[in-house]
Image: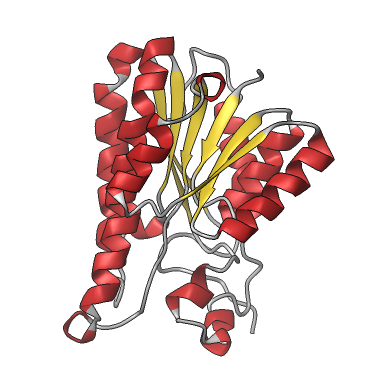
Length: 253
């Protein structure tokens, strides 16, 4: 088989864009997500368009038992995973600390942090056996700077930043690359999920700017994963031209 790329949260947004980008380059894919119907649709689309093989795995990365059961039961021909893209993640709510929903906090931490840990640990034995691999962890500018009403979401992405660095150190001895990707404003389902379906508020997030797209981020991830074996981009922040960091925007009037 060609290189095998495992992408979590591959049914929409950046994850789906990554699946499309790597499929176009003839990589075979393991795609994961919580929505079985969407996974089946993505599988059909990519196999038809690019003549590659796609293995869908339906589970929630928050569910430790489900993660390990799915990955530990991979058929032998799918175990030689070259690239893991830890993309699954979300923001829920934009509330002041004292008003925030505890369930939202738990969901963000369980998905953005625990999910990344579970999937990485489950996949690592396959990479260690090959004495090579590349793990890409999806962070955020929210993992570089804390902003008002970002509380637990920022905390989860700061944790991703720390884990990315820790993994890079610990996995040196196994010849495994680790790359942190930290986007600014990307127009996907992200804001709609964060504001719990309120399209008006979600749309205002991108008002007056040309945001990144999922395809833009996928292009950067693909580049990082296509470099020579002796080159590793450890940490990369990307934003729209009209955004400098988590705070500063130049919005059109």
